[in-house]
Image (tube, rainbow, N blue to C red; front, side, top):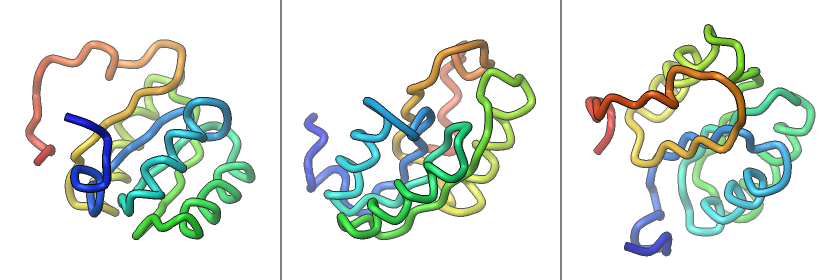
Length: 113
């Protein structure tokens, strides 16, 4: 499957490491195809700029959550925030480095479509 408009339009995406580089460009890619986004990174001011640009590019909804994913307390809070805002997740894009329990995915897809 491609990451094209038919698949992404209206999808619910959680993207970590979204404040620069590949993560920032992925946010714009999902936005151009009309996805609903939750973006996260440590830099809150930069996230707000990216949030605005994503809306300009065509994202239906964009929410940002500033968090350091290397802190073991934050991944769960980020996922909970995304589920509260979007209702479910279609794509979980882990674009950050460091320790986090999400790296040890056990196959639980309970909150995905």
